[in-house]
Image: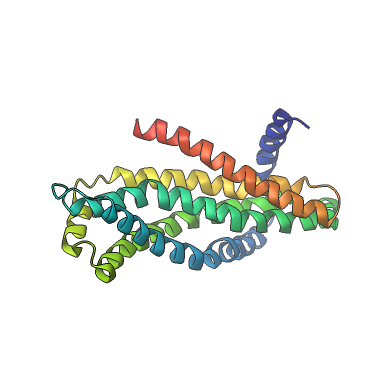
Length: 246
C-alpha cells in the first residue's frame, strides 16, 4: 500500500471521527478516562525531563561562555528561548508520541484483532467516533497545560543549576529571563502544542484501527505509529516555524 493511499485513508478516518457522539454521557465518561490515561499519567515524565533538561541547557550555555565581555544574563536568555521555542513544545511532544502513541495503537489494535471493534459496528456504534474523538479532545485540551508546566520547570531547572553549581549568578540568570521577553513566543509554542497533540492522538489511532493480524502485528503497528508520529511532528514543526516566525 503506497503512502498516498495511507494519507487518503487517514483523512477518511478523520471524517468519520468528527461526527456527533451518539450518547453524550458515554462520551463524557470516555473523555475523562482519556484525560487520565493520556494526560495525567504523563505529568511525572514531563516534569522530570523538563527540570533536568532546563538545568543542562543552562550549564552548557555557562560552560561555553568563555569571553568576559559576554554577560551572564545571556544564560537565562538562552535557556528561556530554548525551553519556550523548542524544548517544551517539540521535544516534550516527541516524548509523548513515544509514550502515548504506543499506548493508543496497542489499545485500539488489540480491540481490532480481538474483534471488539467489529462488535461495536454490529451494535450500530460509530467505532471511530467512540474510540478516537475522546482521545483528540483530551490531548488537545490537556497538553497545552502540560507544556506550560514543562516551560516553568525547565526555566526553574536552569535557576536550580545556577544555585547548586555556582557557575553563574542567579540574579544575572533572572535578568536574562526578563530580557527582551516576547509574549508571542508563548502563543507560538501553544499553537505548535495543539497541532502536535492532534497528531499524537490521530496518527497512532490510524495505525491501531487498521491493523490486521494478531498480537505480533499490533506490536509492529505500535512501533510504526511512534516512528511516523515523530516524523510528522518534525515536518509540522518546520512548516509551523516558517509560517509563524518568518
